[in-house]
Length: 228
Image 1 (cartoon, helix red, strand yellow):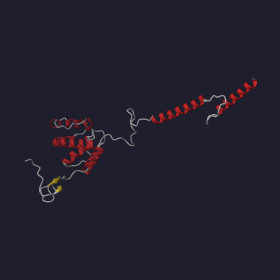
Image 2 (cartoon, rainbow, N blue to C red):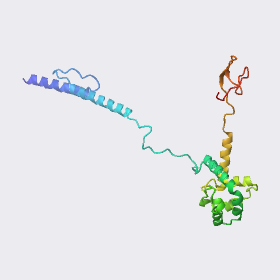
Image 3 (tube, rainbow, N blue to C red):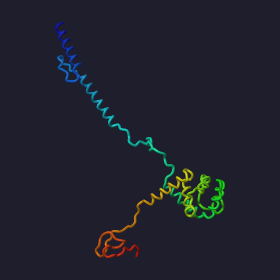
Image 4 (cartoon, rainbow, N blue to C red):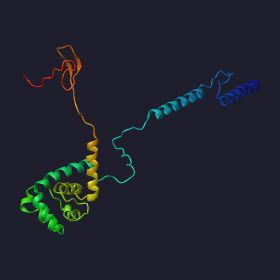
């Protein structure tokens, strides 16, 4: 009995050691008929779980355009406080308004010495009816604008100079306002535009194709735009 028990204990001990030491490969045959299935299942489950977690991490991506995202960092340099096209529109409006009352407004502005005199000039009876929309920020600026060396002497040029200088509404200097208006006009002059348009015609003479000066290229028959 002792020999049989010792033999079985030895076989179990050897089998247990072989199971614990054979993690990478297939466990050896157990003489007792007990296969180490628990360790094999546990290792397989661990590998499967780690693969699923890795897959979930790959699938989880940060959204490219979130609702609460922070705005991108602006570029270097000072941000523009006004837009050149807006300055041009303001200048054109002021030119039309000032041109209507310049004969009455100019003498009072040239005689003004301070902001109070300029305000009184715009509040006078023949001038306040014009839709100029004078702003309080203009009053201290106008005497300095009229005394500049570059201020023109002709009427139309004076109206344009003053309108361009006040287009900034006091947010920028008069010189910068004039420069922005000039840049906007130059940009508008460089813009492309349609110089001529033609039609695709089917003429009774047999010609089919684009017209030339709104007429058939072959026989010269003109396109009739009027309704009969």
